[in-house]
Image: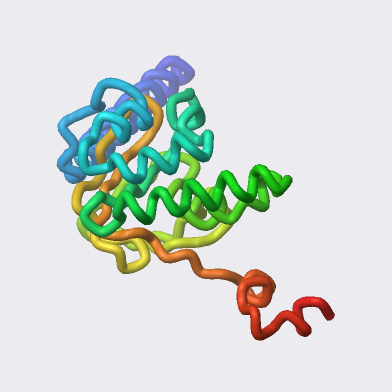
Length: 196
């Protein structure tokens, strides 16, 4: 009889815990202001968003669209056309293609690393009222994700959930912050130090 009582109490405890967890997650998702999962993939959302056409053209030219259209889960921080012009996008595409044709491997292509992967993170990241988290971007750089911005860049929309991740639209591009070695490779006045 004691085993039956303990078993019953254990089942009741688990049921209460599961109900509490469900309510907590429901409260969390309600606080995000998300009306549910949107149809399609992140790539479909980006491609069909008229104010993300410049970002979409770079993602597509860098052959990264297939990743955002797959089953892997990402969070994308896409700059809108208002502060990321077609001319800037075209310049990045030309740079990417020039590096590729000169034999630069994908991992070292600066457009892919410093622009595309600087606006994408693995996994789902959402923000809520008092959010402030450090997240790892695809290029290995860390960014501070807060309720209304990422690394100080204002969000225009947030927590847009799609089949394979979350989409944010941004007022501007996220700045790429080079490490010391990367900085040495970029500054022409430091070529002797770089060679050393």
